Image (cartoon, rainbow over all chains, first blue to last red; front, side):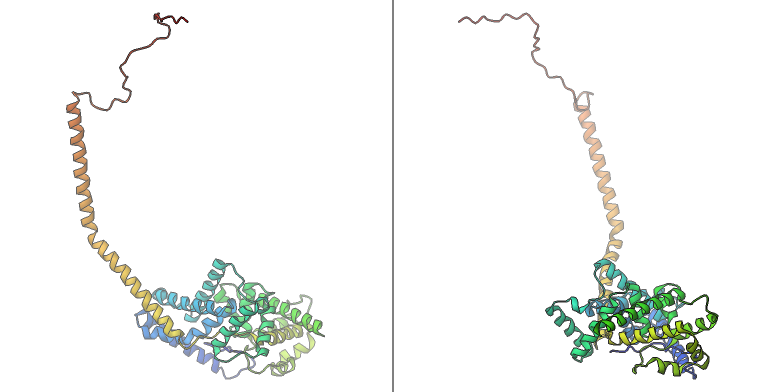
Length: 219
Length: 167
């Protein structure tokens, strides 16, 4: 499974004692602020650096909502274009990353609204030919061919996720796969942190229930 | 989420808070026992007494296990180049559009002046034409809309001699 490099490490009270994660995240945030200031003065290299630093997480956020690789790539490009042309209006009251991921989420919802298609493609629903195309696109994504085990695992995950509401699915992926904090998710989705917690709790319950049912069915 | 009858509600809340901060995306999959071993002493003790919190931890661990096969798309090596090229193309496009607008803006006063002149000339020509028509019509200007057609009036009840048709 591809892991997403984090822009900010998650601080874990009680488990991590040195606080180095918090320090590195504040350094990164400060670097971001500086790059944004330069980008606001039409420094293209600074914006390029911002793209470099945030592209993985923009892909990850979009990938939690949309499952078609081409769509994710198009949305990611659209997000950075939007960010570039509106960066002068960005007042840096929020972190650049939060602002960028908020644009990402909104762009994804817009795309889904326009298309009115299912965001997650369950491979079991695909024809053989479509599945091959889908597989080929994911092979292209990380340069490594998928083994049948990996494909089966992914199929299972996507089948499980198809039982969740779009927003819950996005939150769950952001939280449990990509390591966003509850506060970050709340800021990106523009909802209360407690609502995020409740929805995550319910989403986990649903997933566990499905997993157990499946386990029971297979013996 | 939290049982209101549970005396350890405060601990439950603290535990749930802690649960949300457990780092995701660890390379090594951990069992509940491994997580429990890493918990601070108070939380580990609470876990032994609270079946709801134990269930919440189990759900978290099982969900993470289930999502381990989730494939996150990653940007290709040329993504940044593609973005910067798209930005450059959009900027060129906007410059071209701006160029047209600048040209339009520069020409706008002349276009307005020319239109005003044409309107004035056209208007005066129309007025002159009208005056000429009035003069030609001896003061009876205007089109006569209801112009009675001059011709023989036929009355049905008029005594007209009709030639008798005889067989």
